[in-house]
Image (tube, rainbow, N blue to C red; front, side, top):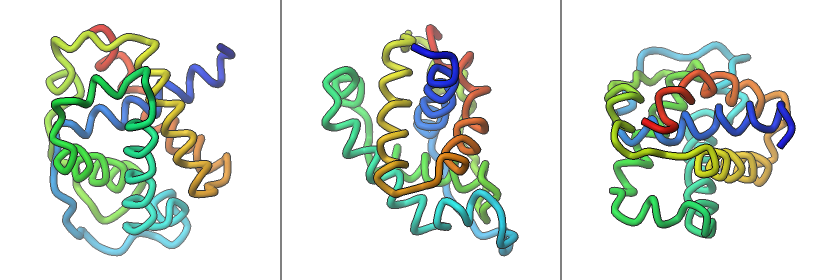
Length: 150
């Protein structure tokens, strides 16, 4: 896998799995018009993106079994809140840390990359520009070390 694709993969999975800690999205004020949150389509765009990601995961034989016992509504809410928060939206993520959420699961690079692939497909389905996709992935990437092999 090429370096840039691996980095994109790391970023995406980090965001998705972090949300397993879950939180609520609460208005903190109106975000600036030209921020990532707005480029993702605001609240409705993020909700649609997360929905499309869940559809991708459900069809992905590489990782679907990892989600068998996951509380999907809770996961969805947490991921929406997390993406809203890190993208400059009016939400505050208050879920547990990535380390706490993923401790003991032993997620592999292959699983992480599969989830990143699914997120990229979801973003492409939403017709998000590559620059917007890369901005989101860059915000998610630092969490890789707290997810894989923990």
